[in-house]
Amino acid sequence: MKEKVVGALRPLIPEEVTIEVTIPDQEAFGHYSTNVAFKLAKTRGTSPITIAEDIIKKISTNPLFSRVELKAPGFINVWIQDIEYYKELDKILLEKETYGKKIGKKNKKIQIEYVSANPTGPLTLANGRGGFLGDALSNVLDSQGFAVEREYYVNDTGNQVVTLGKSLVANCGHIPFEETFYKGEYVAEWAQEHKEFIEKHKDDPEHVGRAAADYFLSLIQEALEKKAKIHFDRYTSEQKDIHDKKYVEKVLDVLKTKNVVYEADGATWFKTTEFDDDKDRVLITSKKTPTYLLADAGHYLETKERGFYGKVLILGPDHYGYVARIQAVAKILGLEDSRVIITQAVRLLKGGEEMKMSKRKGAFVTFSELIDEVGVDVARFFFLMISPDSHMDFDIDLAREHSNKNPVFYLQYAFVRASSILQKTECGACSDYAPLATPEDTLLMRKLSEFPDILEEVGATFSVHRITQYAGELSRAFHNFYEKEHVDGVEEKTMRARRALVEASQHVLGNTLRILGCSTPEKM
Image 1 (cartoon, rainbow, N blue to C red):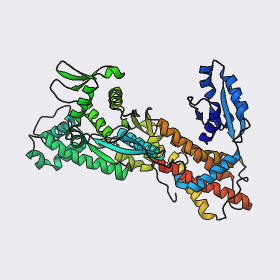
Image 2: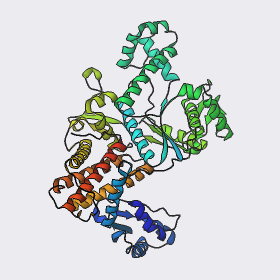
Image 3: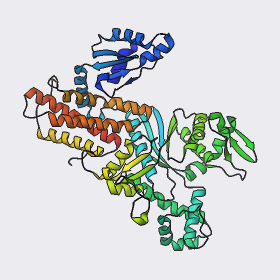
Image 4: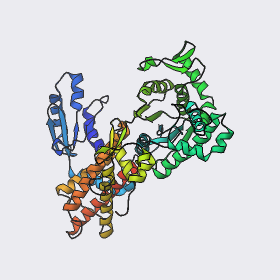
């Protein structure tokens, strides 16, 4: 529907001006609203109100609109004719599971990297938050015509693997324990189970670390793919796919060619201050050891050479300082539409108080344990409700509730209710939607028609939490319709129209659940 509004405005607006159309929070401000008069005022030296008045005169007779109004200081608010929503119902009933998707050639390859936790232990809540975000974002971009690759980058080399090996060797008493070693119970358990192996290779902690990392990675993969339903197309090995294939050396040559590196104090430096970083960064230390940044730059080059035009990297809350330098790499290598998303920390709340993170006291701390506690659909929806740049309080009590207070239960219950109505009623196809005239009918129609607009918005802004907000609005509209209107026991034309509205609702509710990665239950 948003495209139709833009189409009505486009003949009046210069091609170089982007027409932004939004959905107001309140119907009093229209079904859709645009600020285009403000943009034109900047170049024309005229007030936004004067420009808006002129535009309104020209579009007020457009049959798309039932009403057009000016809202000071220059917003143009429009209301859509009911017949346009009737057309949208027909479209939903025709397209069903593909409604909202942009079907066509996928000519833009984009890689989304998420989770990428070091294989040195179980997944944390922060890993889970980024995992659900990357998975849902991949679904959205796929629906918008992008060719998406979902990547987990395995940091299976370097200091963390050696440190893991030393931690295991120390657990078996062969070397003194150091403060920097891994201290989790999972380390002690693996060490006890592999005493003979560690004894045999105690002088080669990297070998021990690699063996343990392979095991922990298998647990991570199982937790993500089977338990959390987070899918990956590719697990990229830093050792095999980057170091062994000489991408570290290749990218260093590229950076030198671009004249963005220099030598100082025996080290090789990257001129990241030229790309809004607070200081230049080391690529190769004075000990001739490549840094993580250089290896990651090699990874970006490998991504570019495989034909991707952009890369989205989702990182946890302790990586803020990394954004400018990795974005510099993306820009230099020509990964055009690349960005980094930082997720904020997660707190678990129970009884209104923060849960202490201690396994010894019986409180769960890992991502897998949280899913075991509340279920994968609830965990996924709750993580996706909050913008990644905001700290999150995960309310365990609310997550356990099977009531309308629980937003994912509320959404799934709407889907089940719609399915139940369709199973219990039977009538011919609808050819007249005019009986859909109550406030509940019309609000539900409008909410259904917003689904493609929401997907397009999220595809452009990556604001996945907007889908969960929409899911709440759609659920509320459907439940209000369900409580106040009848499908059976009414006049035949009304029954056909209402049943068609319920069928369209089931499709959009299901599509919303699927795009978020949640299940569509048959009963609740």
